[in-house]
Image (cartoon, rainbow, N blue to C red; front, top):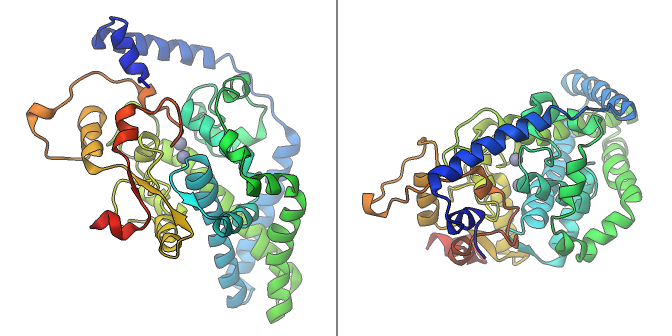
Length: 375
Ligand SMILES: [Zn+2]
Ligand SMILES: [Zn+2]
């Protein structure tokens, strides 16, 4: 298993020259990108407009009309749906950064269904393609096309053909092999009707006599509008504003505000460099990272295991070689690696990607409990 970077060196091209090739390649890619004509899918545009109108009305009802019990219910239900994405579709299924026993996989599958962000299999495929071909034509939400496109616009236009062509080269057989994922795919519509639309609306009406329409607009429409936009913010804001301590040549950044909103998914520069780390962040403390806290809770009862962590020496080496200087490590001058790097080094989708460097695979630490990692 050799990295692409190493392969270039083995072909006899100097690191300096390979950097020049890289820049020329990027220029060509940008020129080619302008050829892409975006075709609007009006049905989806109207769906999103309706959702946002309903969501805004739900926000008004949240502020001035509905019971505090309905607000609390909406927040708890929203938290579960967010964890279905972050702990489930993202860190478990897309990146394989930890393993989960059957009860946890079923729970996360139901929570992911609440979010209305397509079924897990498709979510994972899109996300792996995003990591593998970040900010190119093959990236479903290529952030080089602007903030609106990477946030929500990409869902309202026909995709670039490269998303499908290159997407077919990304392996998702492990996800397809999971019976929980297959079950969700088969019964997705009925699961959405039950868990995403009916239960959140009916519970406040049935248990504490909330008006059924207030319940619909607050616990379903506002919750969905808010949680969809928060997830989209990782693709837009966390690819735009923030530092790049781990790899200065890639688009993703470290953004504390997005981490706060998403339960720890805004440490995005680190995450794109080390997507197999179950914390999706460098620091072991729960810094704006309640998803890590939740995975650790499930690890403590034995439902989550094989938590993967990148050792700090590995992080330090990478920071020193490819970071933007905003993260400081004390490293001996003699151990510094000054070789050139290109952005493709970070184009790995997670644990199991055949392009992972051998030293990265070898250095990963596997824990079943966070306590072990802190010893
Ligand atoms: Zn990811
Ligand atoms: Zn990203």
